Image 1 (cartoon, each protein chain N blue to C red):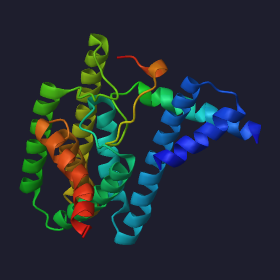
Image 2 (cartoon, chains in turn purple, cyan):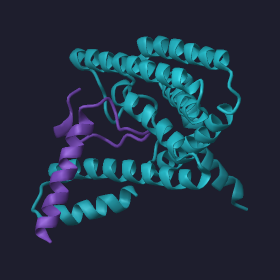
Image 3 (tube, rainbow over the protein chains, first blue to last red):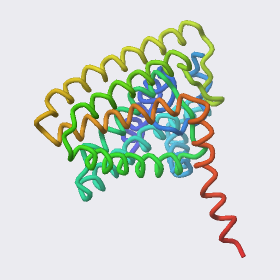
Length: 40
Length: 215
């Protein structure tokens, strides 16, 4: 189970980094961006 | 959806001994995966039933890809955003299919010219449109986002011209071309102050309906 969680965490972190490089989320909702991803 | 994602992310973070910031990053990514996956899947499945799967996905993707660099007005909740996106993409797909039945090249060409000219003007005027949850202040990032938006618009212009040319003899291609124009027009509208007000009003509709239904 821990391996599975590790995989989910890795994929979600990668997607978060990809989304952070854009102007906003792909759809019309924008949650608060974590401080470590901010590149204002 | 957001609550469920947060709960699951918290469970995973506890199991992996993540700190609060690592958990927040995971929530951010998981929410994006959930929202994109659910929206595209439902648009595709309902689109198959309504016969507008490709049109619906085209509207969805055209708006989303430009939004990556242009930004735009935002909804206040993920639930409203997902529901609205699904209804809008399918509705726009149905309209595109309906508009593609008569073959009027001049009307289509005029629509194309108007939508692209208006988009070019508003992208030049407003991009990037940020939000309090993700402010954009760095001049380098602003330049990058503007450049990205113009490149995306140029790519859409090229694709749209292909749809127009090959759509002269094919209603399904005309339908996809019109879907592209509707997706682009909607995304352009969300860049403007009028689009932001409209989205805010639509966002308040469920609250208003709940208030009205109370005795």
